[in-house]
Length: 284
Ligand code: AMP
Image (cartoon, rainbow, N blue to C red; front, side):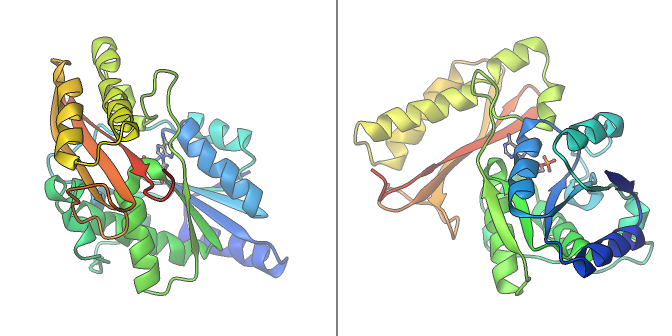
């Protein structure tokens, strides 16, 4: 496995692979890797002859009051996690390698980015779309792998790739969870022991919603109220949002009559956690 920090080094490697007729899979990450990231690597490994993991804490997707400075980083541990999965190349550039002093071009997807997390994290998805575009241009992958854990990000990137005719297949991968159901996340490392115990309420709320749906409930107001009630039992939890939206447009739905995404964001202490599940209308 090679570890490189410059765009030029990536281009040279990818060119050599292309000349040898190899397909390339890309897994973009911000590092501090866990089994969720590794599941994307495993999917990429199955579909492609070569796998690139990028590790870059992208400054332009963080708001001024967000956790850019404190975001967890451990490149040495990340190298081991990638090596275990048979990754071929890690690209871990500096911020100045990705954004030179005169940088001034952005990719912005409308509408979808105003919903859900976009309401609180202004400019976040513009930062994500811009860096993902750059990573696609640098690595020229056949396929790129994203987690359903960040459901809005996945929807926005699919829209961007369709709208702008990127020649890459976007593969969504299922959420990997801890034994108690908490979705794995690099940000879980911020949680104290009591916060970690409280954080399971996101998953409990999802399970509660699924139970209600199984019993035939279709009213989004009724289901989200039940989810609120589950989370309200945890004094450390403060709900940012719980919403049901159309899977493609991310527009709010009132009643479960179509495939929908149920997404929630909850503060546990100061840490903002997200989770979601997909309701499949035809599957019931
Ligand atoms: P991040 O490093 O948090 O930016 O995540 C990089 C990629 O890993 C994104 O596509 C995430 O959706 C995905 N990811 C993060 N956590 C999980 C998880 N628990 N299960 C599946 N994919 C995940």
